[in-house]
Image (cartoon, rainbow, N blue to C red):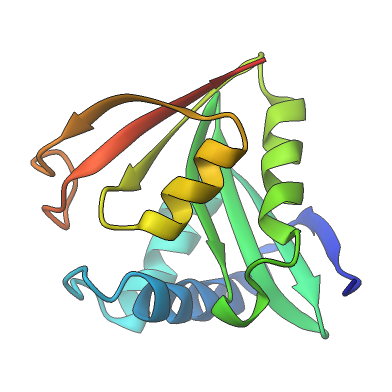
Length: 149
């Protein structure tokens, strides 16, 4: 199994986090419209995600290969470099989020992201409701998932 480190992100690492996020979205969520430039992604991580969430990164092969942003009992973002899927990294991030939660976690997942849906459901998340996509900027139908200890 590949060795990796999970820890809190530093501000100076945000450009690499934003690049990995964009690469993951481009590869794994190609069905979504591309609404933002790389510069806008970086602004989002510097001014929104880093300031208002707990931002956890995964380092492997001396680079950032995953990230998770949590706030209260929500997983706001969870992205992995596509080359590092199915290696237990996402499971470790979910385990961390569960351990730090109040015993209840929520997240949104796009309906069309079937691999992520299978992953979350395998880790005990239950579908609570589906939306039309009118509440996300991509306009893509999504699912509210919830996990309870």
